[in-house]
Amino acid sequence: MVSGECRLEEVIQEGSRVLLLTERRKRYLVKVKPGVRFHTSEGYVDLSNLVGKRYGTRLTSNTGSVWFALKPTILDIVMKMPRPTQIVYPKDLGTVIFFGNIRPGSRVVEAGTGSGVLTAVMASYVMPYGVVYSYDVLEEHLENARKQLDALGLLPYVRLKQGDVTVAIEERDLDTVVLDIPTPWLAVPNAYKALSNGGVLVSLSPTIDQVMETVEALNSSGFVDITTIELLMRTLRVKRGMTRPDHMMRAHTTYITIAKKAYQDGQT
Image: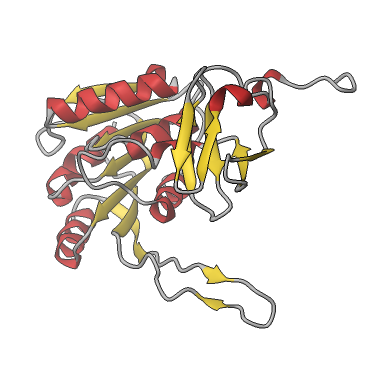
Protein backbone atom coordinates (compact mmCIF):
# COMPACT_ATOMS: atom_id res chain seq x y z
CA MET A 1 0.00 0.00 0.00
CA VAL A 2 1.32 3.42 -0.92
CA SER A 3 2.11 5.63 2.08
CA GLY A 4 -0.96 7.67 3.02
CA GLU A 5 -3.23 5.53 0.85
CA CYS A 6 -6.25 3.97 2.57
CA ARG A 7 -8.05 0.82 1.52
CA LEU A 8 -11.64 1.48 0.42
CA GLU A 9 -13.15 -0.77 3.10
CA GLU A 10 -11.33 1.22 5.81
CA VAL A 11 -13.03 4.45 4.75
CA ILE A 12 -16.58 5.34 5.79
CA GLN A 13 -18.76 6.10 2.79
CA GLU A 14 -22.34 7.22 2.27
CA GLY A 15 -24.49 4.17 3.02
CA SER A 16 -21.82 2.50 5.18
CA ARG A 17 -22.81 0.83 8.44
CA VAL A 18 -21.01 2.29 11.45
CA LEU A 19 -20.98 1.17 15.07
CA LEU A 20 -21.01 4.25 17.30
CA LEU A 21 -19.47 3.62 20.72
CA THR A 22 -20.28 6.44 23.13
CA GLU A 23 -18.39 7.68 26.17
CA ARG A 24 -20.82 5.76 28.40
CA ARG A 25 -20.16 2.61 26.34
CA LYS A 26 -23.54 2.65 24.62
CA ARG A 27 -23.46 0.97 21.20
CA TYR A 28 -25.51 2.14 18.22
CA LEU A 29 -25.49 0.66 14.73
CA VAL A 30 -26.24 3.37 12.17
CA LYS A 31 -26.20 3.80 8.41
CA VAL A 32 -24.43 6.92 7.20
CA LYS A 33 -26.81 9.23 5.36
CA PRO A 34 -26.25 12.85 4.28
CA GLY A 35 -27.95 15.52 6.36
CA VAL A 36 -28.88 13.14 9.19
CA ARG A 37 -28.15 13.84 12.85
CA PHE A 38 -28.05 10.84 15.18
CA HIS A 39 -29.41 11.78 18.62
CA THR A 40 -28.79 10.04 21.96
CA SER A 41 -28.90 11.01 25.65
CA GLU A 42 -25.23 11.98 25.19
CA GLY A 43 -25.95 14.48 22.45
CA TYR A 44 -25.91 14.13 18.70
CA VAL A 45 -23.47 13.80 15.81
CA ASP A 46 -23.93 14.72 12.18
CA LEU A 47 -23.50 11.48 10.22
CA SER A 48 -22.51 13.44 7.08
CA ASN A 49 -19.25 14.35 8.80
CA LEU A 50 -18.22 10.68 8.89
CA VAL A 51 -18.01 10.33 5.10
CA GLY A 52 -14.36 9.95 4.07
CA LYS A 53 -13.18 9.26 7.63
CA ARG A 54 -11.47 6.04 8.64
CA TYR A 55 -13.17 3.46 10.82
CA GLY A 56 -11.94 3.94 14.37
CA THR A 57 -12.19 7.73 14.08
CA ARG A 58 -12.76 9.64 17.31
CA LEU A 59 -15.58 12.18 17.25
CA THR A 60 -17.30 14.50 19.70
CA SER A 61 -21.03 15.02 20.12
CA ASN A 62 -22.54 18.48 20.48
CA THR A 63 -22.44 18.04 24.28
CA GLY A 64 -18.73 17.18 24.33
CA SER A 65 -19.20 13.42 24.76
CA VAL A 66 -16.34 11.50 23.10
CA TRP A 67 -17.43 8.73 20.73
CA PHE A 68 -15.73 6.33 18.30
CA ALA A 69 -16.95 5.35 14.82
CA LEU A 70 -16.07 1.64 14.60
CA LYS A 71 -16.36 -0.89 11.80
CA PRO A 72 -19.16 -3.29 12.82
CA THR A 73 -18.57 -7.03 12.86
CA ILE A 74 -21.12 -9.50 11.48
CA LEU A 75 -22.14 -10.09 15.11
CA ASP A 76 -22.73 -6.36 15.72
CA ILE A 77 -25.01 -6.31 12.69
CA VAL A 78 -27.04 -9.49 13.24
CA MET A 79 -27.70 -8.70 16.91
CA LYS A 80 -29.58 -5.60 15.73
CA MET A 81 -31.77 -7.54 13.29
CA PRO A 82 -35.55 -7.66 13.94
CA ARG A 83 -36.49 -10.53 16.25
CA PRO A 84 -39.79 -12.18 15.36
CA THR A 85 -38.56 -15.20 17.35
CA GLN A 86 -36.00 -15.95 20.05
CA ILE A 87 -32.43 -15.65 18.76
CA VAL A 88 -29.30 -17.74 19.21
CA TYR A 89 -27.00 -15.72 21.49
CA PRO A 90 -23.37 -14.89 20.64
CA LYS A 91 -21.92 -17.31 23.18
CA ASP A 92 -23.81 -20.15 21.47
CA LEU A 93 -23.25 -18.99 17.88
CA GLY A 94 -19.53 -19.67 18.03
CA THR A 95 -20.13 -23.15 19.42
CA VAL A 96 -22.49 -24.01 16.56
CA ILE A 97 -19.93 -22.83 14.00
CA PHE A 98 -16.88 -24.63 15.39
CA PHE A 99 -18.45 -27.80 16.80
CA GLY A 100 -20.52 -28.01 13.62
CA ASN A 101 -17.33 -27.75 11.53
CA ILE A 102 -18.92 -25.01 9.42
CA ARG A 103 -16.34 -23.45 7.12
CA PRO A 104 -15.96 -22.02 3.60
CA GLY A 105 -17.58 -24.43 1.15
CA SER A 106 -19.75 -26.24 3.71
CA ARG A 107 -23.25 -27.39 2.77
CA VAL A 108 -25.51 -26.88 5.78
CA VAL A 109 -29.18 -27.46 6.52
CA GLU A 110 -30.71 -25.26 9.20
CA ALA A 111 -34.14 -25.72 10.78
CA GLY A 112 -35.78 -23.36 11.57
CA THR A 113 -34.89 -20.01 10.14
CA GLY A 114 -36.63 -17.98 12.87
CA SER A 115 -35.12 -14.51 13.19
CA GLY A 116 -32.35 -15.34 10.69
CA VAL A 117 -29.49 -14.48 13.06
CA LEU A 118 -27.91 -17.95 12.97
CA THR A 119 -28.65 -18.16 9.23
CA ALA A 120 -26.67 -14.97 8.57
CA VAL A 121 -23.71 -16.00 10.72
CA MET A 122 -23.49 -19.44 9.07
CA ALA A 123 -23.78 -17.86 5.62
CA SER A 124 -20.84 -15.58 6.42
CA TYR A 125 -18.75 -18.69 7.18
CA VAL A 126 -19.74 -20.93 4.24
CA MET A 127 -19.18 -18.22 1.61
CA PRO A 128 -18.00 -17.98 -1.11
CA TYR A 129 -18.49 -21.60 -2.23
CA GLY A 130 -20.89 -23.10 0.33
CA VAL A 131 -24.61 -22.80 0.95
CA VAL A 132 -27.06 -22.81 3.87
CA TYR A 133 -30.42 -24.46 3.18
CA SER A 134 -32.67 -22.87 5.77
CA TYR A 135 -36.06 -24.45 6.47
CA ASP A 136 -38.97 -22.91 8.34
CA VAL A 137 -42.64 -23.83 8.49
CA LEU A 138 -43.71 -20.15 8.49
CA GLU A 139 -43.39 -18.08 5.32
CA GLU A 140 -43.33 -14.84 7.36
CA HIS A 141 -40.09 -15.94 9.05
CA LEU A 142 -38.54 -16.74 5.68
CA GLU A 143 -39.61 -13.40 4.20
CA ASN A 144 -38.14 -11.47 7.13
CA ALA A 145 -34.89 -13.42 6.84
CA ARG A 146 -34.78 -12.85 3.08
CA LYS A 147 -34.88 -9.07 3.55
CA GLN A 148 -32.18 -9.11 6.22
CA LEU A 149 -29.87 -11.46 4.30
CA ASP A 150 -30.27 -9.41 1.13
CA ALA A 151 -29.34 -6.22 2.99
CA LEU A 152 -26.21 -7.96 4.31
CA GLY A 153 -25.21 -9.28 0.88
CA LEU A 154 -25.52 -12.87 2.16
CA LEU A 155 -28.61 -14.01 0.27
CA PRO A 156 -26.57 -15.68 -2.55
CA TYR A 157 -25.26 -18.19 0.00
CA VAL A 158 -28.68 -19.14 1.42
CA ARG A 159 -31.61 -21.13 0.04
CA LEU A 160 -34.74 -20.33 2.03
CA LYS A 161 -37.26 -23.18 2.03
CA GLN A 162 -40.72 -23.48 3.52
CA GLY A 163 -40.91 -26.97 4.92
CA ASP A 164 -40.85 -29.24 7.96
CA VAL A 165 -37.61 -31.19 8.48
CA THR A 166 -39.43 -33.66 10.72
CA VAL A 167 -41.26 -34.71 7.53
CA ALA A 168 -38.37 -34.54 5.04
CA ILE A 169 -34.96 -33.05 4.27
CA GLU A 170 -34.47 -32.91 0.51
CA GLU A 171 -30.71 -32.37 0.42
CA ARG A 172 -28.08 -35.15 0.60
CA ASP A 173 -24.35 -35.38 1.36
CA LEU A 174 -24.52 -32.46 3.76
CA ASP A 175 -21.64 -31.46 6.00
CA THR A 176 -23.83 -30.22 8.85
CA VAL A 177 -27.44 -30.21 10.02
CA VAL A 178 -28.43 -27.64 12.65
CA LEU A 179 -31.75 -28.15 14.42
CA ASP A 180 -33.34 -25.26 16.29
CA ILE A 181 -36.92 -26.56 16.47
CA PRO A 182 -39.27 -27.64 19.29
CA THR A 183 -39.08 -31.39 18.48
CA PRO A 184 -35.57 -32.05 17.11
CA TRP A 185 -35.74 -35.78 17.90
CA LEU A 186 -38.39 -36.18 15.22
CA ALA A 187 -35.94 -34.82 12.62
CA VAL A 188 -33.01 -37.05 13.64
CA PRO A 189 -33.76 -39.91 11.16
CA ASN A 190 -34.08 -37.43 8.28
CA ALA A 191 -30.88 -35.67 9.35
CA TYR A 192 -29.07 -39.03 9.31
CA LYS A 193 -30.17 -39.66 5.72
CA ALA A 194 -29.19 -36.14 4.65
CA LEU A 195 -25.69 -36.07 6.18
CA SER A 196 -22.54 -37.42 4.58
CA ASN A 197 -20.69 -40.06 6.56
CA GLY A 198 -18.93 -38.29 9.43
CA GLY A 199 -21.20 -35.27 9.04
CA VAL A 200 -22.19 -33.30 12.13
CA LEU A 201 -25.59 -32.73 13.70
CA VAL A 202 -26.03 -29.81 16.10
CA SER A 203 -29.26 -29.45 18.08
CA LEU A 204 -30.28 -26.49 20.22
CA SER A 205 -32.94 -26.96 22.90
CA PRO A 206 -33.94 -24.80 25.89
CA THR A 207 -35.13 -27.66 28.12
CA ILE A 208 -33.47 -30.83 29.38
CA ASP A 209 -36.51 -32.93 28.45
CA GLN A 210 -35.95 -32.01 24.81
CA VAL A 211 -32.29 -32.96 25.15
CA MET A 212 -33.13 -36.37 26.58
CA GLU A 213 -35.53 -37.15 23.73
CA THR A 214 -32.98 -35.99 21.17
CA VAL A 215 -30.05 -37.96 22.61
CA GLU A 216 -32.16 -41.13 22.74
CA ALA A 217 -33.08 -40.63 19.07
CA LEU A 218 -29.43 -40.03 18.15
CA ASN A 219 -28.33 -43.21 19.93
CA SER A 220 -30.90 -45.29 18.06
CA SER A 221 -30.30 -43.70 14.64
CA GLY A 222 -26.61 -44.34 13.98
CA PHE A 223 -24.99 -41.27 15.52
CA VAL A 224 -21.84 -41.43 17.66
CA ASP A 225 -19.64 -39.06 19.68
CA ILE A 226 -22.75 -37.53 21.24
CA THR A 227 -22.10 -34.62 23.61
CA THR A 228 -24.39 -32.07 25.27
CA ILE A 229 -23.03 -28.81 26.66
CA GLU A 230 -24.27 -25.57 28.18
CA LEU A 231 -22.36 -22.29 28.03
CA LEU A 232 -22.51 -19.65 30.75
CA MET A 233 -20.90 -16.27 30.15
CA ARG A 234 -20.03 -13.63 32.74
CA THR A 235 -18.17 -10.40 32.11
CA LEU A 236 -15.63 -8.83 34.48
CA ARG A 237 -15.51 -5.27 35.75
CA VAL A 238 -11.81 -4.52 35.41
CA LYS A 239 -10.19 -1.77 37.49
CA ARG A 240 -6.86 -1.99 39.25
CA GLY A 241 -7.37 -3.19 42.82
CA MET A 242 -11.14 -3.56 42.30
CA THR A 243 -11.52 -6.16 39.55
CA ARG A 244 -14.44 -8.51 40.09
CA PRO A 245 -17.12 -10.36 38.14
CA ASP A 246 -20.20 -8.40 37.16
CA HIS A 247 -23.27 -9.15 39.26
CA MET A 248 -25.37 -9.85 36.15
CA MET A 249 -24.48 -12.60 33.68
CA ARG A 250 -25.82 -14.35 30.58
CA ALA A 251 -26.57 -17.76 32.06
CA HIS A 252 -28.80 -20.44 30.53
CA THR A 253 -29.91 -19.77 26.98
CA THR A 254 -29.85 -23.24 25.40
CA TYR A 255 -28.43 -26.72 25.63
CA ILE A 256 -26.33 -27.71 22.62
CA THR A 257 -26.11 -31.35 21.56
CA ILE A 258 -23.47 -32.39 19.02
CA ALA A 259 -23.23 -35.76 17.27
CA LYS A 260 -21.54 -37.33 14.21
CA LYS A 261 -22.99 -39.70 11.65
CA ALA A 262 -21.36 -43.12 11.69
CA TYR A 263 -21.15 -45.28 8.57
CA GLN A 264 -23.25 -48.41 8.77
CA ASP A 265 -22.76 -51.63 6.78
CA GLY A 266 -25.10 -51.78 3.84
CA GLN A 267 -25.06 -48.02 3.21
CA THR A 268 -24.55 -46.84 -0.32
